[in-house]
Image 1 (cartoon, one colour):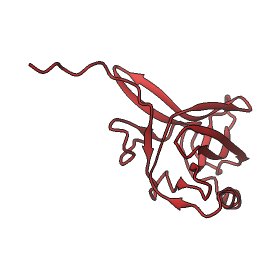
Image 2 (cartoon, rainbow, N blue to C red; image 1 turned 180 degrees about the vertical axis):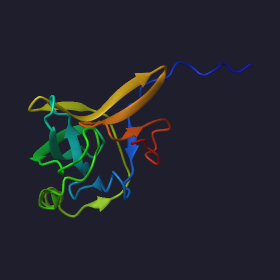
Image 3 (tube, helix red, strand yellow; image 1 turned 90 degrees about the horizontal axis):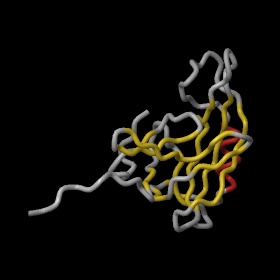
Length: 157
């Protein structure tokens, strides 16, 4: 008789696949590092404050281990409801960050989740567990959530 499945285990790696929705920039930089770039990162403001927007370049070493995060403060679009992700219309910042990568290739990347603080704000990919199901959620903003099988093909927003 075959034993049943064991308890759920948090993933050590997950895959990010570039797409035309929330993941336009993921791939490999000229120097071999893996990257994810977003201009939709945000945190919630206190009270009636609108919160902050960010362009974040997440970098991993060629082996998928975390390397660093580069963050730029940008404005959130006017009238955007709190808690909603949207492009910050910071094309100049995005293009500048992409230029730092040299010749890059947009392609699926398999990397480790990480969290790091920049100016008191968590940036990275947070592992969470609810009733035995794990997810990996982008921070700040929590607008992308990956689940098993961690292949990056589908995610929740």
